[in-house]
Length: 519
Image 1 (cartoon, helix red, strand yellow):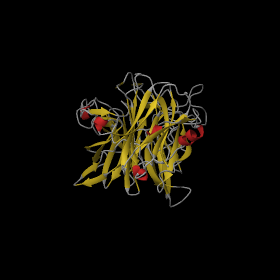
Image 2: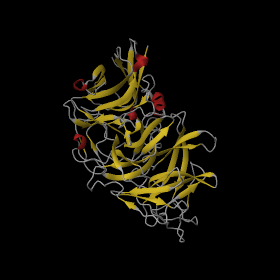
Image 3: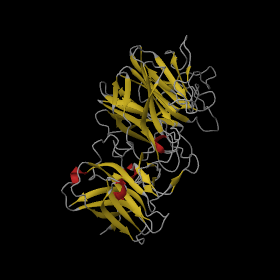
Image 4: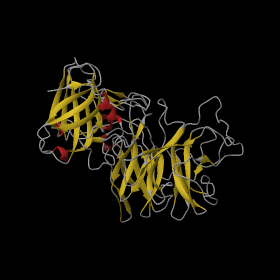
C-alpha cells in the first residue's frame, strides 16, 4: 500500500519556484510590505511590467533588512517573476562615507514608490521607512523603476535629512500632477507635498491628522499602520492595516487584516469600506464557530493593483514561528464603484495566487504553498514569537538547504495541512491514481489521511486515501506513495492532509512536496 525510496533529485526540483502561486516569489525569498505598480519596462519601451517594492526580511532575528530589492514580472506572464536586484541601501551619507561607522546600516522598513514626469521624462521616487534618528524622512530618486535610487533630501551635514514623513510613508501622484504623502502608526496623517522636494508640505497647506480614526480612538476605521493610496474611477482609496475589534468576526482583536476607506478627496473625509484580506484565513469549524486556519497572529501591509482587466490585493503572510520571515502573497478582488460607493470584495487567503484556475495536481507542488495549517490547539505565547502545537511552514533562506525550502513541519496528531485549490479536471476518469508525498518520516507511528473539500468529514471533507507510518521508517528524504480515489471529482477543490497518531505532540514527518500521478 505504500512505497518509500530516496528522491533527492525530485525533491530538489520541487524546490524550484513555480511562479504565480502563493507565495508568488521563491519560497526562499521574504518580501513583506509589498507595494505593487505597473510601470513601463525601461529596457523594452511600450511593454509593461509589474514591480513589487517592499521590505527585505533577511536578518532572521528582527524585522526587515539593511537593503531593499525589487522583483518584477511582465503583465502578460505573471508566473515569470524576475529578481531585479538591490535598489537601495542607506549605508552611506552624501559624501559616500559610512553613516554608522563600526555599526550596521540603517534598518529599512516598508517603502513606497511614485512615478512623475519631469522635463518630459519619467522619474521615480522611493520613500524608504528608515527608523534611525535624523533620517526618518528619506526620499530617493532614480531614472528607472528598478533603481538604483539615490537620496535627494540631505541636510547640509550630509548625514541627516529633511522632510515630513513619519512611519510607513506612502506617495500618491494625482492625475493633475499634485503630490500627496501619507504616514502614521496608530494615528494616520496626510499632506499635500511640494513636487519640487516630494517630501515637504506644500506652501499654504497643512498636515491633516487623523485622516481616519486610529485603533485607540472612537470609530470604525481602527487604523494601525501601512498607509497606501490608490485612485479608482475618480475615488481615492486608502488601504491600511487595521486592528479588528475584540469579538469582531467572532475572534480576538488582531492587526492581521488589510482594510480600505474611500473619499472624493485625497485627504478625506473618508468612508469606511471593509476588509480586503484577513491573514488569519478565518473559517468556520465543525461546531459552526469561527476558527483561525493559518497564522494565529501577525502584521500585514500591502495594496491594490490593476493588471490588465483584473484587480489584485497584494499582502504578506508570516512563515516560521515569528514575524521576521514574511512572504509575498496575492489574491484577486472584485472592484466596483456604485452610486458613489467603492465596493471591493474580501479576498480569500489561498494557495492559488495568480493561478485562479487552480493548481495543477499533475505538477509537483511545494508543501510550503499551504494556506491551511492547524493543530489540536494553538496559542500565542509571546510577541512576536508564536507556539504551534500543530503544523506550520518553516522559514528557510537560499543559503539554508540545496534540496527544498519552506517545508511544512511539526505535523503532530490532530494537525491539518490544506491547499486551496487544485483543479482536478486532469484526474477525472482516471482509475489508478497515486498521491506522491516528498517527505521525511520522523520515527513516529501514525496515519496520513487525504481529504478533499474539508479538513475533516465533520466539516464536509471526503476521504480519498490513507497511508500508515509504522514509526520504523528510515529518517531521510524519501517519497511516500498513497493510492487515492478521486472518483468523479472535477473542477477546483481544496486538498487536505490530516495527521493522526497515538503519540500526541510528536511530529510524524516533515512534508516537502506532493504530486498526483496516474498510470
